[in-house]
Every structure is written in C-alpha cells, then in structure tokens.
Image 1 (cartoon, helix red, strand yellow):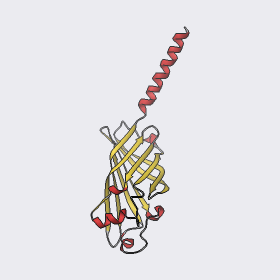
Image 2: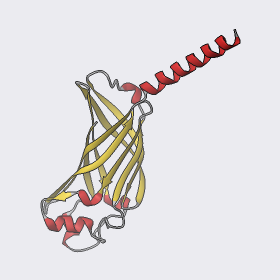
Image 3: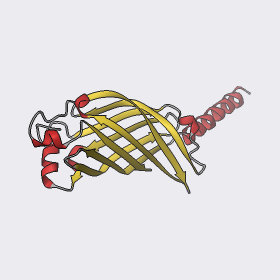
Length: 185
C-alpha cells in the first residue's frame, strides 16, 4: 500500500513538472535587425545591423538582446569609421550593446494565436559601457506560428557618454537617435 501511494505521488509530481516545463519556452532570434537613424539639417545617417541575437522567455517575459557594435553597416565608410572610433562609441573597448529586460505584461500575449500584441518592456540598456533604465513599448506579432517583436526607441547619446565635442561630426549627428528593433523568432 505504501509503495503504491508513494509511486502515485511521484507520478503526479513528474507529470506536473513535465507540464510546467512544456509550457515554458525560450524563443531565440538569430536574425534580429537593429537600425540606427539620425537626422539633422546637414544629413541623415542610417546604419543597419543584422548580427544581433535576442531571446524571450515566454512564461516570464524575460528578454535579452546582444548587439555587436562593429556590425553596424553605414552607407559611407567615413560614417562607420566615426561610429567605431574612440571619440564616439569606441567599439573596440565596448564591442557589444546589451538590453536585459522584461516584458511586464507577457500574459497579454497568446503565442499560439495569430494576432498583434502591444506590450511594455522595462530593463537596462547598456551602450558604450554605460547602463540606463528603459521603459519602452513593443509589439509582438504571431502569424502562422511565426513570432516577431518590433520596437522603436529614442536614445539620447549623452546618456551613454556618446558625443563628438567639436568638428563636423558634432553638427552632423542628432543628439537623440531613433533605434528600431525587429526580431524574428
């Protein structure tokens, strides 16, 4: 009798743990696109990066993005040189930007049903070795079983100790730039 009771309890525990594990899922995007855009009267600057990686834990809303900074590609080689230089982002010393955060309202998202789900993301964004708290909006889309995340945020460069103090680059880049994130999981 004791063996049967213990065996029954163990069976229930194993089934429960299996169900919990099956419902939790980490989504991984190795095709995350980050776009950097700056506009000033002098010129517009745009750079694209397709080398970023992102994850979302569907049960908790935890998310992480890792962005290799030297992978941003610019239209003009001089723009790319300035972006990576010690005077601007010093990408040799700070090779990655990182966002570690949480989708605070993950329960609004049904990952098994087609739809567009607006969500809020809070966390810490690290650029140029400087970390600041963020609170941004994003949209998770589900279509035919494919999941994507899209967000636009404005980044004030001085908040991350990024600035040209003098010369032409200081007037050619905006003080606040738009960053677009598009991740396919």
